[in-house]
Length: 409
Image (cartoon, rainbow, N blue to C red; front, side, top):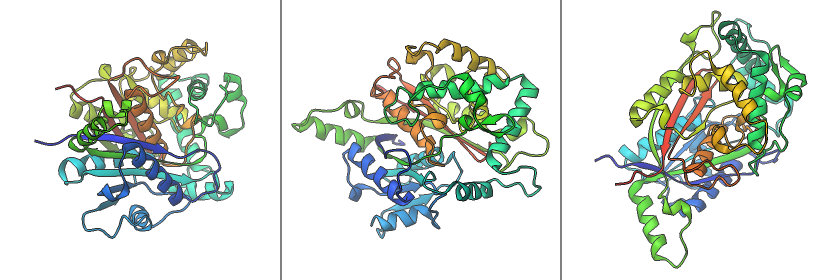
């Protein structure tokens, strides 16, 4: 019988301009996650890391594991996953495989970066190289201009309006105001977004992922180890926290798919991959979109969010812009119920903070907080299942994972 993989602990650093290296931020996040899981580094037999832009290293996970003295060790497996912003979800699914099939008992997934501490010109130079189009079709900043091309196509093809794109940023800022660690402390108005400095024809600075330093980590274990730790906690004099009452968060299933590194000359539906990744994840988890209570969706730019809500089944294809506008009006009163808009309750990349390829791991951590009833001030009522999505490059890779509270036997 294949054992289940569960997320037992989560951890993250502060966000902002921290003046710490990416490996240091990763190490801090790992220590936080292990503490949360009530484990120590000697119990870790797997590490999956995502590359850094600000302080890259060949075989990033091996570099980190060696620095932290996790290596050398005969029984430790270490891997680096590079699928861009989808990397943390790719890494989470790989960690689950390592637990289920490779004999690992405790695998740490980590990402971290210090792009806010990089000088802006250096950050742009490094970021541009990642999705550079040899034909020169994308000018600097390359990534915003690439997403802008998609936004224009979506507007022409499905009737998405400029205002609806801007409303995504407003929605994320409203969500972020409820999370104590979010960088955005006040909600944007629609005028704020539309009148902010333009970085490309259909994108303002408030519609770009909010640049930050920071790190995040989760600990993936077998369900047997999770239960053992729970029983030890029950037998001790220390009272159990909700995290141990629930024995962690189960990784039910996942899916991945790929697209081109940069938009092709002629854009059409064939370049997008989230639909395939989501469909695969739903099949593996044996559930459907109506079974999802919380959604952690990638929103590096508004068009990514609109494509995502259509791809995962929240609304029909071509209806994303109208759906966003409905949510914009529904959440106008800041006292709105979290159940009215159960997506990115932490604020997403646009408002929570985005240390390069780390943010999809924030989606995972927020999903765990929701499923374990620890999302104070933004809690959805009794959620059971969550979907988290990461997007790499310019719609170049999609990774989707479905998470659940433990299944009752």
